[in-house]
Length: 311
Image 1: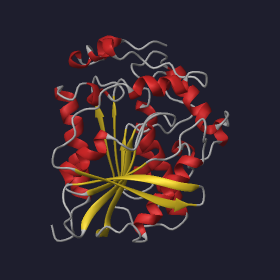
Image 2 (image 1 turned 60 degrees about the vertical axis):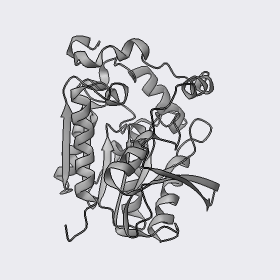
Image 3 (image 1 turned 120 degrees about the vertical axis):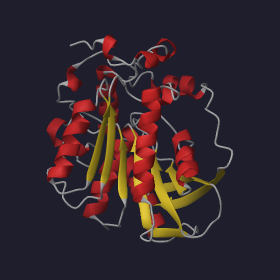
């Protein structure tokens, strides 16, 4: 099946000429990382201060980038997990800075280990170690631990969904929100949107290759729900959720189905589907009207979730 590109918002089409769909395999993953590292980063918000912490885990040192606007005590916090198909990306993530700036909170962005060098469960265990470090009050920052969210974009939000499940089943630290921006949560893409082969930016073949690297094989239905949240049988007891996805995204139907299952499990859930939007389009064309709406939507949801009880 082939996607009809006429369904894509016209404002989002020109970016695809400069950024065709990725082709990622085990053989070229290192080179793809090198090429992507050459792309100039977007301007950083001027008001945001940057820091870095290193924590000790059972698997070694783990770096965490810290973004905040000021040293005001009692800030809300977000544990942020960057995207990149579980095989790309870094903690120096522009969206983490935007969140710190817009929500006036402290964002802890985890430099988790990437597949295929470190397949599941390395990444989620790193993120859970960071969550535990934060929620046990070991960060050294004056954080209101009653106002903490976890989130990410793409594979980062897929990992956030998995870590939310891990947290429920382990320490059950109280979380205000799981912020899931077009999450990568179904290793089978067993949906209608998952059958199209030519999605922009992140296509079916690349996604299957990334899943194989992350899972170090193809466990299909037997994949751990901590890796592929769609595989979870029981979603009860999870923190409130915000999910969004574009109508022309490979992940569209798996994300809509996950939101429906969260609602059925009595998890307070907001779901937004943005018309004509392909995967991560708002990052490529941030000035497009639909991209502005997407960014405003998730930032509003996060702001509401992080409010103090007095507000």
